[in-house]
Amino acid sequence: MAEPTPRRSEPRLRPAPLLFEPAQVAADPEHFFDLESIDDPRALLARATELTQAFRAATDRAVEFQAIAAAQLADPRRFDRLTPADIAAQAEWTEDYAKKMVEFGRDLMRGVEGPGHVDPV
Image (cartoon, rainbow, N blue to C red; front, side):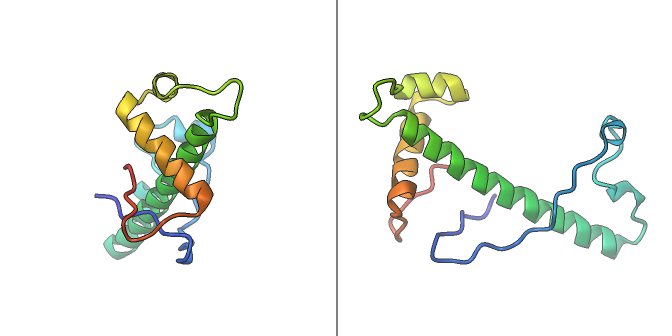
């Protein structure tokens, strides 16, 4: 299970860099961030752990940006605002999840993240 999203008052951990792989290497299904070339199990565990943490951190940040975008799209002050159903269809979510993401995004934009705050993910 993914760790909770770090709150604004907590410093963000700097995950291992995710380096983009060259297209011809990425096309090889056996290749994954050069992990298959690491022979030492300790080094393999360390690098795989770094990548896992980096992907988790990237996922958490992406979810926050999704929530902010959903809240902005649902803003009643926008003449072109979207309904939760519209947002759900665009993001391939359920309508209930879209509603939670809109609220989460509003909380993020207000800077509200207290002990009672629930991450929708």
